[in-house]
Amino acid sequence: MKDFHGKVAVVTGVASGMGRELALELARQGAKLSLCDYDPAGLEKTAAEVRALGAEVHTKVVNVGEREQILAYADEVAEHYGVVNLVFNNAGIAHHASVEKTSFKDYDRLMDVDFWGVVNSSKAFLPHLIASGDGHITNTSSLFGLIGVGGQSAYNAAKFAVRGFTEALRIEMLASGHNVGVSCVHPGGIKTDICNNATVGEGQDQASFADFFNKHLARTEADAAARTILRGVKKNHGRILIGPDAVALDLLARVTGSGYQRIMSFVDSQQSRFL
Ligand SMILES: NC(=O)c1ccc[n+]([C@@H]2O[C@H](COP(=O)([O-])OP(=O)(O)OC[C@H]3O[C@@H](n4cnc5c(N)ncnc54)[C@H](O)[C@@H]3O)[C@@H](O)[C@H]2O)c1
Image 1 (cartoon, rainbow, N blue to C red):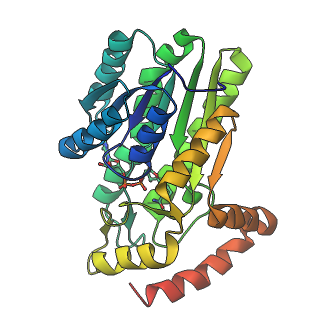
Image 2: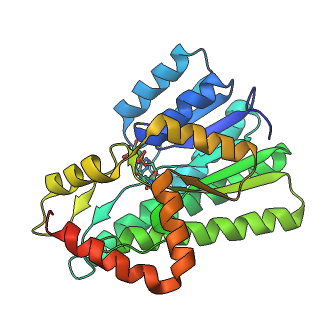
């Protein structure tokens, strides 16, 4: 897909961060949008900003972890616009805690949104993307879908799973000859609300965790991240890395094999002193 003008694009998780910036940039580039989020006020705020840019917008309050909701949403978008060309499965949440302090409930919650949300939406929209004859699906994993990180076992599990699911889907689309591109996005630290909204383990201080991330790890602006994603989609890149941290740590893991885990354990022990 060389440009987005006149294309119908769905973005999940648009109330803040990269989803909001994707919606705004797609609007600037002439796309018609369908936006969803489980935060009704945030959804309407972004929709108003997108409308102010002159773009056509359809909105729906959807929890991506609720399969029936997203299946109904996909049919509603297809009926509303008659076609669906692009889907950005961006919605996500974070949780920081050791394996010992992560409850089964925490794992379920993370997997419901970060993994099942992507699978639910991909399966719901795939028939419409195939039918469009010119489709693209973009699933947001993370740098933490490429490397393991202490304190991130739930997030790591969901984001590695998104990567596996998305790479398999891309191979199937390439083999089938359907004109549906597939990209997996791996952002490093991006300046968004992800850690302000994150949960932490029992006895840990949420504010210190968010503060540490915002001050030391979030290096790339969300609008720049959105533009990188859209450039990657136009080139149908299978893997879209965002930020120098993602590029460097992905390289480190590929060069050192499992050796990077010892380096990360040192980082984890230093970081634990602040959290
Ligand atoms: N910010 C980073 O450093 C970073 C790094 C790697 C990957 N990511 C991923 O990027 C994606 C976007 O996150 P962000 O950083 O912009 O965070 P954010 O918190 O600013 O935005 C996430 C959005 O998703 C929405 N959302 C959350 N759960 C939802 C649900 N169940 N149903 C519908 N909407 C839901 C939120 O309301 C919010 O609008 C996420 O998948 C996240 O895991 C972020």
